[in-house]
Image (cartoon, rainbow, N blue to C red; front, top):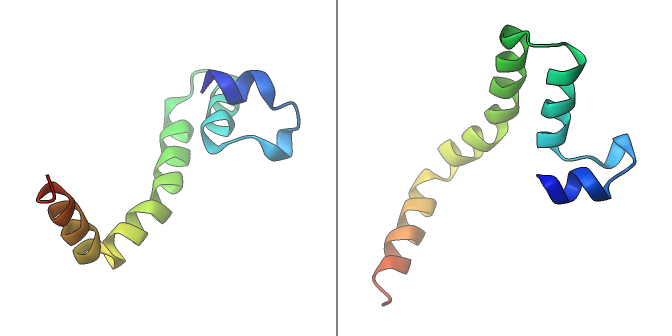
Length: 67
């Protein structure tokens, strides 16, 4: 998180983590809206995992056996 924080100056190019950090600083310590923003941010990766769950688990199991 430190590298993008130091290197990215344009607000449109910042990462999601920096956006959440900025959201927290912008609204003080209001944890309700921050947790809502984090939950919304997690929906897309969780949805992708649910769609491709079997392929992901087969890939992890297959990679563990290649040793």
